[in-house]
Image 1 (cartoon, rainbow, N blue to C red):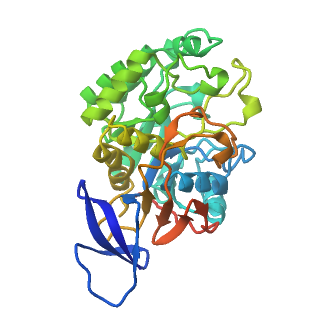
Image 2 (cartoon, rainbow, N blue to C red):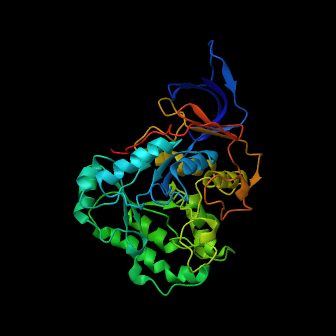
Length: 409
């Protein structure tokens, strides 16, 4: 297959022929002479997104999401690779729980995927399974009760990577009954102190998940940690009229923090854009106090940022770097770039086709979005390893075609 159109290559939009063979990009050329029919692409060809932080609820809570519905929603949002978190039921902590999850996901996912593990007594065996691990610094957010420092050393010694949920519950206050109260419940100091405490752990690359505050970001950058930000912390704050639908950990923060994150994103201080897709059903979120924290976002992440590009609020290069190029390198895989030898994972968009986000057009089991009413640029076509998953806005992918990525160095 040969595509011809305007593509994002080496930081610029260029007219190029893109040859695809066996799921890989075979060549990228300015000129092409040959007998193979060329498919003209009228849309802009971009690298497909890689979401390093999703909770597809499989196994354990498949009434809220499963890997088929989650991966299908991701594809509609231009994301063709995800890394799924380990706080399942049961938690992913042993070779047995990992293998069972992997088997289920291989049967359901229509996109490629990596899987995180928690760090426990079997960490040595788990390193043989995956290169990705997650540590929660607040016991209230996970079944993990303590940090296994020996396990962390083993992970780093064997080339693994660890993502940290940074909230220190020693700084928590009384729970609130609205978004400002919830922000106060899990305050800025909780994030800052948890990030600072990473310096006391064994030496190795540390990624701070879903950074939410200016002070937390400053602490992470000064300590040399990589930083991830979510669309909800970029686009929303505690003043949003969302009630329980905006309840998430860490909380939506002040408008000042939101603006500070945007400014840092524009400067290139943020390494990764990730959705932290954590869906709950609508009837679970109606009462604020009882609402479980978490929001859906894998389908809207890339489209929201592409609309911001179209409005001149952020550069396309910054978005591509944080949603494709750096995540691809993080997973130690040839994804995230339109370059010879890379997987042909592509999303094709028309920046003139601006849509309003409507729950009726989304595909997560959650059935709602905190971004309803926001403008977005959704892809017209999406390709994973040279196969169209979305063609003319219609899903044509196959369940179970996704491949596991171990992410080991």
